[in-house]
Amino acid sequence: MLSTSFDLVRLYLRSMIPYLHLWNFNLPTFGLMLWLAAVAGAFIMDRSFHRARVTADALSMVAVTVIVGIVGAKLWHVIDTPIEFRELGWQVLWSRDGYAWFGGLLFGIGALLFQGWWAKIGMLRTLDLAAPAAVVGQGIGRIGCFLSGDGCYGIPIRPVHLFSFTFRPWGMSFPNGIEPILIPVYPTPLYEFAAYLLIGGWLWWRLGIPAARSSSVGSWLGNSKSSGAIVGQYLLLSGIARFLIEFIRRNPKVLWGLSNAQLASAGCVVAGIALIFWAATRSAASPEKAAQAHEKAA
Image: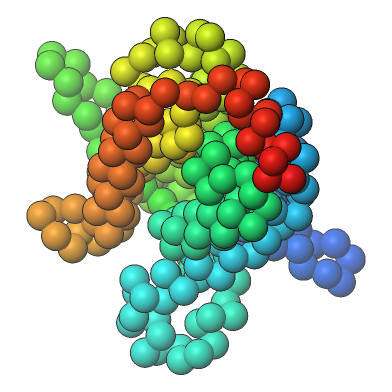
């Protein structure tokens, strides 16, 4: 019975296509999930601002960040894969596929830093408040990669030998994807989706810990009310997740047996550790002082 259920699920997933055909309009599933990621991110960030008693417009900040992040993801992909630019020319900038996670992250962080400074919230504080929304949005975006079959696949499934046990991990093919593949591979977008949702839940919980308890709950992660602590954890945890998943993705290795994404992830981990350490050495302002500073800035 269980085997039959898995077969039905696998058959359903194999039947997915990159576009939803609505009358004469073809709706890209990647674009649809990107829109859902932006909506979910805007909602979470708005709740984060509300909980922190920040009066800035979270929705407009998310909208700007998403647009800048998409541009950054596309530009980074073009830089990362110059062969496509040589073959297709400038039209590669307008193609519906080809977006790099690290480019979106880098440009998105830049957009948030500027908007946090402009709104007088504080640049690092803005990143802290946005971290849960960002990582959940990343996870939903990965479902877009999965549905469209844009090539973000894992390596082919092979038997795994662990101590005295041998088993074959579950995998699937993407015959109807933008980049079709007919042999079972690791569905890495699903792994990233699960990892990012777990990280988002952790960050949301850490961000909501009262100041009186934040230094005693996981003190090695820094005071959650000290600017930079939450975004440091975001960089650390998401970087580790992507670094590990890259081992079963089919991206080419460029240096020391690592892919570009792994090198970028390692950089995120180092930056995250540095931010956590820096935040741990600073004492968080009391709620009264924080409120006074916000009122003065307003």
